Amino acid sequence: MTTKTRVPAIEGWFTLDDKAPTLLGSKCTSCGNFAFPKETYFCRNPGCQGREFAEAPLSRTGKVWSYTDACYEPPKPYMAADPYVPFALAAVELADEQMVVMGQVVPGVGVGDLSVGTEVELVLDTLYEDDEHEYVVWKWRPTGAPTGRVA
Ligand SMILES: [Zn+2]
Image (cartoon, rainbow, N blue to C red; front, top):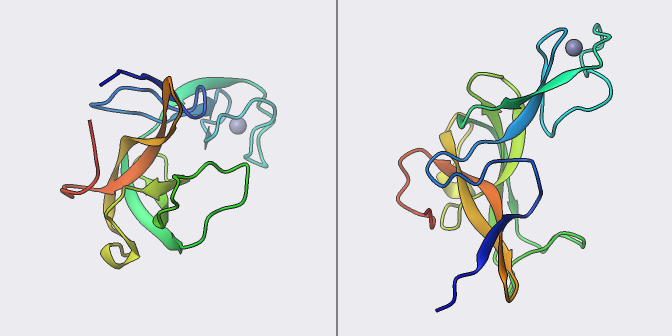
């Protein structure tokens, strides 16, 4: 068995710490408004003129705010597993920032296992692989759920 290099599917959006992966957002240095993905130009707070942002590790836990079933393969450039396996998508309100972040739900957890308010935590999972790399993305996992391949 060869060891592939694990790389983030999207550079700079999250840490590759298996034990405590963390999304990397931004925080406006003027008003404290959080953003994910990172804000680089203008603060999203309409009442703020802020133009400077600090990198901000975001909450690793949150509650499901909305969810849906991705029964059909998303169009390119989305990269999906082949053969395509349906998965659940969840919009999660982060515990501290009260900001909503979308993500896939770990394999084995479907919409029937979710409800609004379900507590979830951030984990890492492989999105796809090539001969040399494993491309890793963040996913949401119901807190304490036994399913999902988590390192
Ligand atoms: Zn601001």
